[in-house]
Length: 378
Image 1 (cartoon, rainbow, N blue to C red):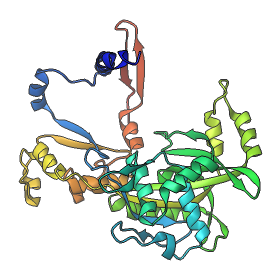
Image 2 (cartoon, rainbow, N blue to C red; image 1 turned 60 degrees about the vertical axis):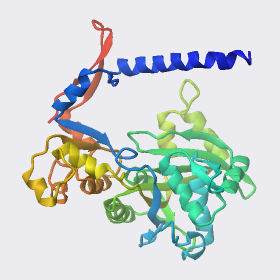
Image 3 (cartoon, rainbow, N blue to C red; image 1 turned 180 degrees about the vertical axis):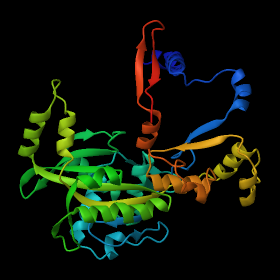
Image 4 (spheres, rainbow, N blue to C red; image 1 turned 90 degrees about the horizontal axis):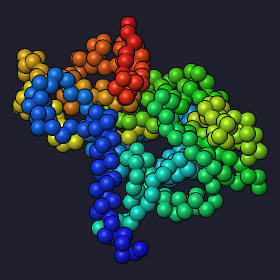
């Protein structure tokens, strides 16, 4: 059996790749046609993603807002503000921030043989948050080991494209009692409205008013997103194990799994922790590539943009905050600063769906396949 595995591996890989290519063809996203090169000359619109495509996917915390503070703190990986030691805030609050970041992450720590340092590996956004802790001299490898031993993961509610947030639920010891902590992270506009309390700098619990939430969303988040930063908000909620078990039994579905009602209940009444702005720099070649696609040349000046007509419309699609998308689109040359403020140039997903109408996936028995239909938009 041991001998047969290496001999059978090429065959297994070939079969797996063939099946994958077949699925891509069925979904009509596989392009392997000599005519496609000629057809590309007929392109009028090119849709492109932002994170990892236009940007490098190497995120670092650049700014952050915490609890009930009025200021936005800056962070520089080369000259860190030493969040762990110098920030005028109770140490218990800093430990709470660190614990929530560690609790809600799937990042793994690996040893880099070239630099002889421990480096985080995983999803770029989570790596950026772990690097924030490393920059501030936290022993992240040890913290993760302690988390895995002392804080059992009960469940993880995955990221939802509509709700734009995810949650991790773990146990922790609270004054000799076994308790549960729910840590939620996601887009500020989808997490902050569910917060009802927060802390002041002296560790006193205070009400998280509507005015406070509005100020954070329209001022702090707007500033960070307008600076081309990807914004991420953290919040949490503690409850007893007994309360958690009761909710689980109350809202579990017929298959014994957590229902949507359980998620709605578990992600309500949160305590606001903070919002972090992560910088994800553009790829070095992206500006030249956008100019080449739009105008057929990389040598495009500011006045040339007004005179030359675009050969191909480049459209950026992203799930980030709309101000972040505006900033990236302007910097990369997809639109100008003036165009970014014109109506209809930059729109949200809700506005887009309202314009095109609802999308329906309908089974076509005649062709034995699905077809897409749109209801009329406005």
